Length: 419
Ligand code: GCU
Image 1 (cartoon, protein in one colour):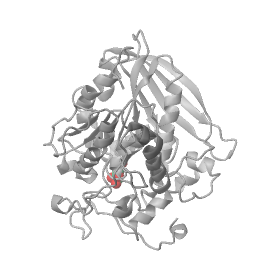
Image 2 (cartoon, helix red, strand yellow):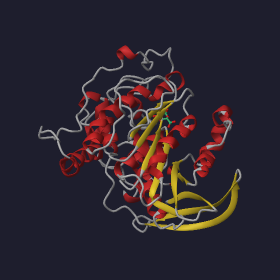
Image 3 (cartoon, helix red, strand yellow):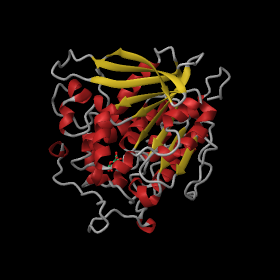
């Protein structure tokens, strides 16, 4: 990739170790070297976007093209068809609530390149006593093997928190939930680019500079999950939301931005290359994402902004990624700066502020403030929601707030909220 870009070195990222000479910056006075953001409401020809039609017909496609070409990469035209197979249907209980859980596999047609086999892992749960199709939340989740390995290494991380888990909270509203395993679509490492859906479509060959990376592939997989849900009579596919944390927060934001069928998103601790402004110098930096452990998330073209170009040369920033979700509701969450500072809660808040004008142009409410709120303050009166919980790098403490926000939008009643 670097040869193709004619670059010979990359700037290294921020270091998590505070004693490192290259330690991540956590000083707010140094956090905004490039305060000027690209304007989602100015066309490339310099004229202002003043009506919804110009947004939909001209400006939004311009922004999509820039994210495709420079940041996350393009989904190829010939992505394989997916054939869904229900492996099992089980009646069980979650807490006191009777549920029906289907385990599924989405088999990708690999006739184009038989050596690579891809099957999407999905499980879908709905309340057994539902009398009508139910709204549903999809979580992008770690595979059970990864969870088991992490639990061994960091027992505290996965120790069950007190109170009902998110699935039980969702069931208590009468909604269903689904668990989608993104790594079943695309492995989470650079060598895996020769496999997964990216390797299948490229027939095992290296990517072109604007080919998709893992984040875009994971979001593509989420859209295939939604295709399946549209055929499942127990689900109200017009009220399907998406949730993901950390790298899967990034992927779920992409899914929301690119696929307008998703009704709502809970984007947790997505940080750099997610909802956080690239132009912020706080916590994780572009050099981490362009580095050997994460570059496969992105398009090859993205690497050039990590040297010789810099963040200020990016033609887009996260405010515009969030704006692509408009007018649909998005809730952006993070943990405390002490504990989840790497993801830069304030950088995500500022990006949301920057997406506000697009929501307003489309007749919706923005965050309602430009002042970074005190920790644990929920901003959930408009279509853009935000809250920093006081825990660490986890989505759990913000679920009740997200569900309060989501209540207004997820009702299946025919006379539901106007969109
Ligand atoms: C690393 C990475 C983040 C990512 C996180 C995760 O910390 O730097 O960008 O969000 O892993 O997915 O847990």
